Image 1 (cartoon, rainbow, N blue to C red):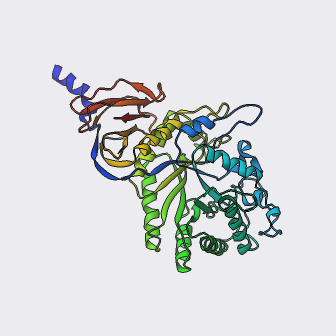
Image 2 (cartoon, rainbow, N blue to C red):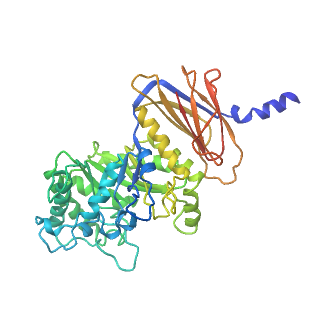
Length: 448
């Protein structure tokens, strides 16, 4: 009887809750999995409310400027969108007085001051109202391309009292496959538009990263687009795409699908960038549930699990949607106070891996477990992110997870779960391993 009781107590561990980190087996760079959409909310002179310091401390890899125009914290409708910067399409694109850069300058300056790299979306915010603005196919594609050119020159070459900020990443449009909310035109019109703009911008700025178009997920539309771009010799430094799910594996599956399409149509060297993602069960009956989840511990564990899984998937960069303060999709900062939520610490955790720099081999044996790890150039210091995530709300028990660290004698562990937020906990390396007790939604950062 005593033997049976002992076996039952050891059951979670014996069932394969095992993670092995191999610090001596480098496998490449830690990817920029911790990018976000949008920048910090920075306090002005009155009504002080700011997340600038915590935003900067997170170590985000990128800030994509999409849907910035929805946020009062960024300047609302006067920010980023082509129609905000160049409000009268009848004007001459070569005339500096035709542009209104003021608030976009301020907003991008805040992102730069935070130390985060800007990923500039050239286009318009999504339109949900009965009347749409700025998403019609342009009357003159070449003129639109010239406007985009001069925006780039303003930020990178000092044109129109501008800057020399060397913004490297320029994305053409957003979700043209979604419909009138984002592109109120035909696929053929978009093909013509993208061809003109991409060729023009790449011709003007051969050293910049020019790409797009941030597809929402229409598979046939996406393949037709890539087929047409390849046939017309359109350059593409990166291809961007979006996915929202509640399970982790679909992210890796979609990444593989996108990579196959890019390779098939001759864009093997183009980077694959997932620059909108978050936890969503569905967009209808369970949408309220989803936005409640993404703001809590379950959403935080989901964030960490997706980053770990995508480190091993054929995708190059991730950008979470959204760090914008006034949106239900923001699982990183509190709507009212801008204080960090638990989801913020998943991104901070990933910054610890990026600080180390070189990803190493990890082996994961156990259901609902995810891990990524890295070491620095000396090989003596490193970090591992170990995550437990399940979308099954009927799972309640903690799980004992043995983390094997060959050659490591001491670690520091910070745990984030339902009761703790990046809290250092006692951790002893015994026989080359550390045992963690992880709730169904939890993650731990181990550093040595």
